[in-house]
Length: 310
Image (tube, rainbow, N blue to C red):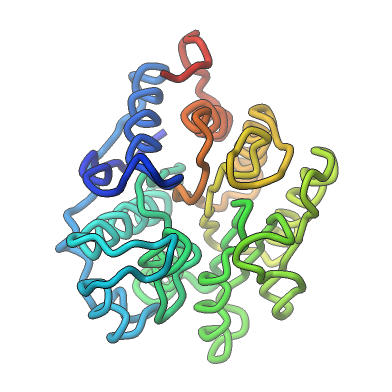
């Protein structure tokens, strides 16, 4: 498994917020301990992400706003270098995409901030630039991928991704397919119904049985396969975990391993290149959940280390 990770992604934020630096520092260290043979590669620098790439998904006004105070909302503070941090996360998503597409092997961007709530002109929900949407548009316009699917299993609806892709589908209705499985009711209050034949939503009531949630996840993935994508991008959020402090879902560690197993089977049986980016997940068990998912996806079990992930 190739992981794109830059330790500088922990150089902003506060331990007082759910989306905090230790999410990544602990996760990167845990993965290195269990999988010393996995490569954690630095993505290209933030400066390598040209404005032209970002402007496919975001407005020029939004890019200017990222460099200005005040806070965007209560969940999304302004930090002096947040535009650079967001570009760095986007660089990792683009690197994971290009590696997966070129080499036909999985790659994962282990970065922050997350991105799937960011709309074309608004930072919200801990998200500043929509890395997964930027990657999807880059795949289509720069790499020539005709059919790009995005699978979002974060517990919160990927409203920004849906909005950005919906605008693109007006010009090419077959270019993108978006599937989101998320808690509802929950922030941001969207994703209650499908937004179109290529923008599918599976809202899951809080505290639903694991079996119900997994059935929806499998149905969403089957819908993606029916679309016959040439590339699959994954918004991997781990806040549907039973122990997550800001959601009310019931998935366990082995369920995230199941998601990774499905992705491995898809890569093998359907020859679809697949890349993922980290979105949410705020439990202290996040390192263990990411490891279970990536280990199953890559079919590479790690060394026996206690699950405390400390």
